[in-house]
Amino acid sequence: MASAKKFLAGWGRYPVQECITWRPERASGLYLPTPMISRGQGRSYGDAALNENGNVVLTERVNRFLDFDSDSGELRAEAGVTLAEIIDVCLPRGWFLPVTPGTKFVSLGGCIAADVHGKNHHRDGAFSSAVESFSLIVADGTVLNCSRNENSDVFWATVGGMGLTGAIKDVSLRLRPVETARVIAKHQKAQDLEQAFTLLAEEDDSNEYTVAWIDCLARGRSLGRSVVMHGRHATAEELPASKSVLATGGRKVRTLPIDLPSFALNSVSVSLFNAIYYRREGGKQKSFVTDIDRYFYPLDSIHHWNRLYGKRGFVQYQCVLPINTIDTAFEGIKRILEQLSASRRASFLAVLKRLGPESGGLLSFPQSGYTLALDLPVRGKDLFAMLDRLDDIVVKAGGRVYLAKDARLGRDSFEAMYPRLSEWREVKQRIDPNNHFDSSMARRLGLTNE
Image (cartoon, rainbow, N blue to C red):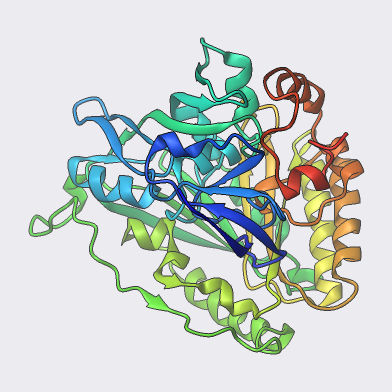
């Protein structure tokens, strides 16, 4: 297996670092005898899958299906298998992902390392809730079978552990049965943040999935105006008899061929887009049928959409604020939006979701509360100073920043956000005392360089 020096970045294209890459063809090549970090599809946004001047093992070709029971929905596959590949194979047989993030171009190993969540976290939890077990290559090269009952401490240290406990070899998980490849969706306008919170908090069994798009540049009485989007899987009876109910539809994919100039996304252009989007999507208040790709993965239809933000890239700031009282999360999110609106920084993507209880992962992100995600171009000297101020709001509220999206969080803030960090360090010290699994993020946050 040959190595090659390459400049790598996460999906945000910031930072860019030179790494030594290895691309194995078989699971036996997922482990190197020298320090390393695994990298799946490169869809974490910052430096979690970077290892500056060090080894990065690319898992994309270790992507074989090992076993699938079409009666029970139980799947075992190698860590490099993507959610897109699972959908292509399993959805025509009536099985869909129990939890999915906003892109299907992520690997199984990455989903566990980040403990990804979706629009149904308030009902069904994070990705780990569907994981039965996984095999993990640890620092000495041996393989541990990990589940809730076997090596459970390693299981929970790996869930959300950003690849720092070992290299995931293969994964066993349960898929969910669906009758069709369609979603029944309904949109509701929220004129301000308070109404958005009210709509997100509504308990309705028919709303399996819920998310809010936010106009992050709205100010004054319209601060936090949103389109709240509900959805559920359509039954076969709800679709025309002429349709193949499990066909995915073959959505046309476009490519953004160049980096947009830095001035293209600004407060004026984004304000105009937001006004049009609010009117168009907010007007869809009657239930309508859409396909799985359009509902779950709207940006996947544009390859390289991250080029929208120009060559310097962007950072995604995603935080969660807990529901100690409803006002804790509301007031914190309000303050964050006020800071953003006052700065006139254009976030092309701003999403608000309600989250359910923690999964048990020692460094897992979700907790009961509300999460806000913002995409911010790397532009201007005061960007990171503003994000530090947002960190202060999050820490004071008892919340945390999502490591899979992070590129700049400070060590002190990180340690204040993750109360089970000492438990994670105990497991890491026991199974990897010499920090065989290391990354640029780990060093930045003090996870491997104490």
